[in-house]
Length: 362
Image 1: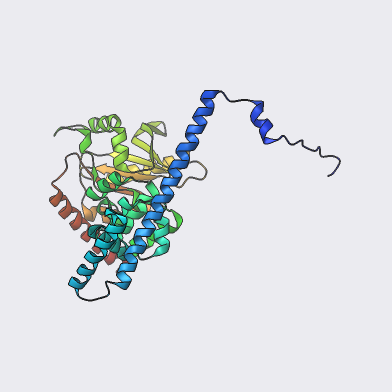
Image 2: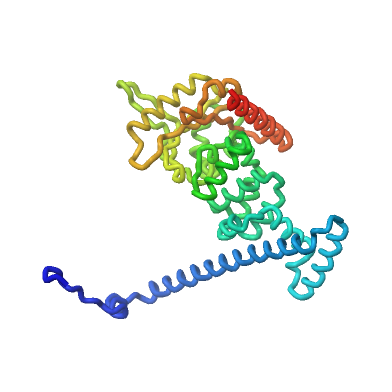
């Protein structure tokens, strides 16, 4: 060792512990934490192992038994297998569960993707996912579940509220949806099209038939937890009525949020009427100011969300809001009957995809 460097005397680990003895309460708290963490890790490992086991069972049955073309043959074999497995290993291998395992192996054929998902999703998650017929919708919910750590109740709520159909992503052509989901899977990369919805369900605000913009804002602040749950994971509230002063004139942005995964500020403007072209100019003004004065090192440029009572498709398309980082979404303070909502979302999805395809041809 060079003479200029002083050698460091090592202290045995046991002496480090004895230097500051922990009190009984601190020791007990540490032990409890260790035990809880260990149990959680073991349970997670067991659950992941169970998921992979069920996939292997389903894969083996599909491969070796159900290659016969006759449906009645496969059904008889499944009942016979189930009766023997239940006798040996219990009710977990009943006909219905075996059918779920077969379906599981069928709709999640990629073992690499399966291993990634099984580290975060339980068998109960997968049982809800396998019955979604649309592969893109199924992949969306699986990846968002992994990224945002939804429990099974949250997953069911998201599916029931038609979250996929309400995202900007769902309105893109299938190839673009596949591309974004692949980036999400491989890079954990969230985009605004995955985050923003249209419409937003604000029925929890309890607003009457007639209300002012200040009432809408006040209700959101009062129900901020519910509002953020509807907005999605990752949003953090920053400020209300953000003052923006330019040339000595004060302007006020309704709500300002920060999104952790997007790493950017999100400006929110509330409108009681349908979206108007002038609303775009106002939001662009706010975003330019935030980009200049509030954006921190390492952050992406701010984006804007205009929440309005309604919007006209052609107006939104002509303004090409995506280039400005602006999303326009309607909000519903009273939920429509589910069948009507499904029809409206399906119509909006078909129109949006047709519009994108027309623009791509030009």
